[in-house]
Length: 184
Length: 193
Image (cartoon, rainbow over all chains, first blue to last red; front, side):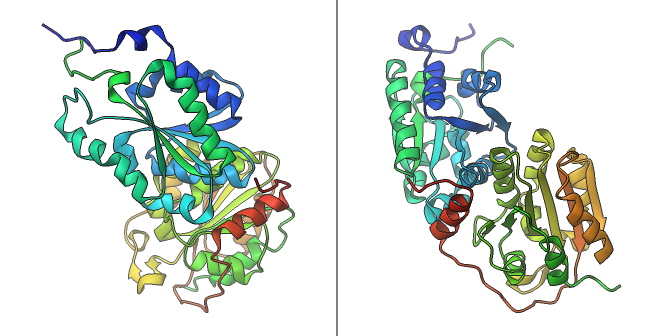
């Protein structure tokens, strides 16, 4: 019997990616780069559809750190979307945020948490908060769909109004677990 | 073969800046750009290897009315090769990339790079969708490219310039990241927070 992707009732009821998109809009984020992730599917679509934003697909997450740095040099605000596995790809280039004081807003969908079915996702997922902390990036967590607007706005304000490096970690519980048994 | 002197190449590229924004890749390209004259609109990298082209892309998207030039080395470009695919997709007309290709890692002891044997960065850039991708071996071609940088109708563009491998005197830019950032932003009219 194929299992369905498990989602909480509130995640179905509240359009949390739209709430994050609204937070990015209200904080005047113009460049949104990403490495695709299923958890970010709707937010990526919203950003592509938004004429006020340039959505930039990346080949690897570290490209997004450079893009955000360049955007800030040129007076624009950027956000970077990735899965937790991509945090590991960013380790050295986070130097840019640490030494130059660039604002940085990372939106990270978590793997390797509750219900993970792929053991290969667990080591990096579990190391993600600490890896970010060691690189000088502060972390906030989003657990419930109803908090998306408030937490995303807080993360964006910390990044752009305090000129800090911030990662918003979006829990796997909220996104839904990939079972690898979904019908294709 | 009389490979070009890297300082001559960069001096030619930066002779008439006219508001040009420059990202200088870490190592010798940053020293070359500084040797051509310390400038408030140059962002030299002291780390974050592989990021030069992406910083250039972010800057080019944010400042569509300005021209942006990335000057980097073959080692740095090899590390950030995926960024050529990302730039080929975005096609910012105001972005130009110059690789100073000495086929070696000059700052770390002169170990040979992939471009000394098999890797063809012009071919990579072209295959990634950067139509104007050139291999340059003469100063006349550099001068032509330097003029093309200011034409934003047909970018992005890419040039790989074969240069002599000699390690020249280090002319160092400031290594204070926040100073460099605020200097550029200030020159573009943005206030500190």
